[in-house]
Image (tube, rainbow, N blue to C red; front, side, top):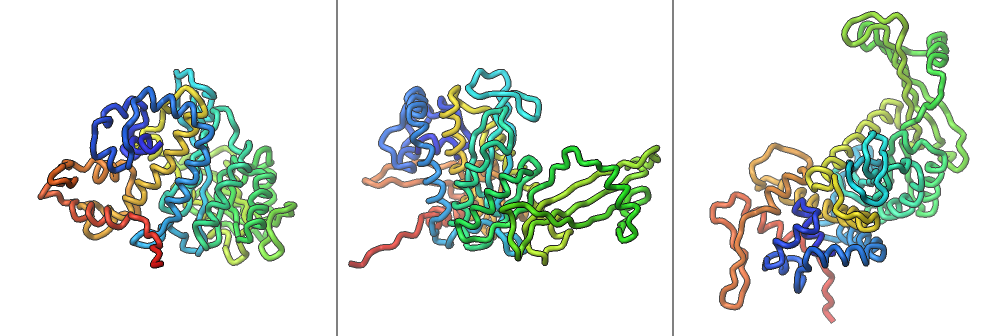
Length: 409
């Protein structure tokens, strides 16, 4: 499992990639493994132990994110409003042409898988990457994911949590599960879930808003106007008396399209967001907070491209599930390295950013050129004398060792 994690942090997921590290002294010493298994042995052991290692990968992830480092606890990136975001979504892994277990037709029209990913904070730390069959709907069995990730998020941060999800989770059952977890954990867990209008008569609602003299229209440009309003909801088991459930609705009317062509009939766009945030958050605040939810699409891309997890390595679903669970750990390792090594003033010359992509971390740190030298009974890692990242590498090596309590007895 440690050897395979060593592959993933280098952007490699194929079992055959382990062969080039079997005689690598740095690989074995860095991971503290006696020997590196062959590709066939690695595959067989992953297949055999996958079901019993699912929870072990989650324990690895929790230990990594909850550890105290020389720089302090992990900074997950809280929202300016004081909440810690918990972003949940599914995405598509295209495995077309493969005869792998549970590959099916996804909502993007390709054959593959639709894993669910949960991220904590705004910097892209992954709580869970859970593989799903390609045909599984977003809301199906999601309550079991929430039973794992919400307690984990509550354990990692003392801040109130804000659960964000798209319209795929517009389900009373899901909202009730979030509220139940908040009650069980004695924590505030607010929600912002995109509303799914389904068969809502948009034209009829637009006619009502146009006829209502109290409606305030905002004219965005010629032929385009917008109005917003709030609808109080009575959902059993969702929200509290102090923070009742409400839905923020936004209607956009277009009589002239973006090319300047007049439309024969007005075009209407109706959107909504269900939330349990306190009343101090205005309608515009709710919409802006949901806009930040779109950032997680970049994290999906890092899994699929930077870490090369678009096509999974095994034909067995359980093994691929374990691969995704370990990939969440690998992503967090790379994120920790990037946030500690490539953001500060002594970082290699790069544009300013709040975080670095996995590809950048792999190129700048994981693929650093060096030599393992065994001399006078000591092992030495030799880096280039003119290496601009030498200072960063040395600082990082010392900082990311977890701070342990040492007994004086």
